Length: 249
Image (cartoon, rainbow, N blue to C red):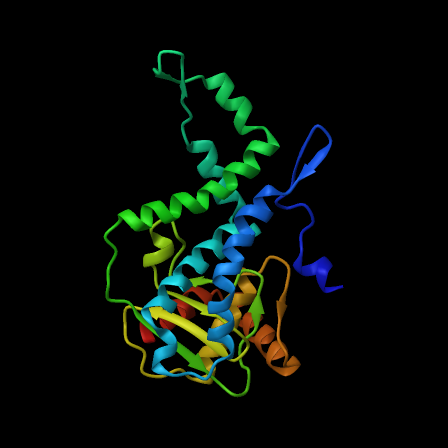
């Protein structure tokens, strides 16, 4: 069943005194979903015009990308490392801050604390990106094709390199398949063309990044993409193809 594949039960639910609480999902993620979903639906379904990639659209897609990155299970390890590396302080009755390593360790090892702090990683990314002076010369494009050449994986964001700081989520070049026939691209070089062979590279990276699944409405495209992925992976050429993709478009 699709629900068993695309849905992880109790991922954002925590338990206190035998009672399951879903405040993270209901109060935080639901608000984000409701605000960002119309932009993704518009980008996926509306006829492509220059107005479709408005400044408002690009800004909200950046927020969506950050949200998608941190909510994806593949980012769990990175998020937990950030939580473990962070420092906690408390304030005494005289409003003087102090550290308590034993108490901090106890908090960080508690499953409820981990789930609550997991969401704060999103907020920290937004804070740092808002404060930072990021380069403003990224070209945004929406590539559209009739033959639905793209496969979609469970970690769909393709960055030019692995993000190693919060601001990378907004400043790194990236590709984001919106559907099987639309690809959103942000690059430092203005794209001149996009060929069918390039979509195979996109698909190979999607397959390589996927944790559990990739999907496609076209079985022939999926089979061809898997064959291509196995060939370039076996030859160790996938990083070179990825570098070519970002240097070309």
